[in-house]
Image: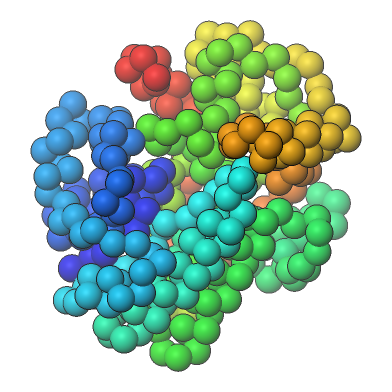
Length: 335
């Protein structure tokens, strides 16, 4: 039996779809307050009958922060895909760290106790090291823990350390570090914010850039790695290194909107992020832009996915094609 955390999120939801296509038995952890609307939207990208597939999932009420419930949930589980994570900072710094670090620690310990055969952890390129200039960041790039790292990046790096500790104790595990993940999610968070903002007519862009990847490719790679003999390794998953301007322009083309044409500099966006965080704390709302998003939006970084290509020979979907598919789906479904 397969256990998936973060089942209603972008990665978890798309992963479950691909697992169900292989007739796998899937158990998903969800909170008692979880709603399935986002998962229904994800499945609708693939089928007009999403509820038929949702009904095939064995739902277990639980929380990655509740170690006791995890031990019970992992009975008879042989494979774990740990996709649950908090991405945005906003007012939830403690929640972000707890979910991403303590939650991963709990999952690793429960998997070790249950004798899970394979554990796949979804990290991020944010947890990778840095390179100089246009050199490409790879799995061996050295991590430096400093104030230029966002809280999310640090939380994913610390989470990876929990998985490595588990590997040292005998856990058969792999780690994937996807780039900016693009796909249908059913929520207005993460990269989905970009699609929603472009559809409303976003005029601004930044000079930054990063590695991007189709969520369908992330799910497929995870399944291939779990079904392989590969263990104790981490893999960067990036289809292409794209400028933010190009990505936003492709989104605008997909919606038939005007391409963004006003450039926002790093200092301006950083100041907006600080002010937004302060206002968010005072008036109790999650800001669209914080210091972390400001930093990532203005940095230009390049990543290498050579390791995963050499390991399993995987060919990634072009970023422009992925964006076009998402825009068409969202337009046709009023999203």
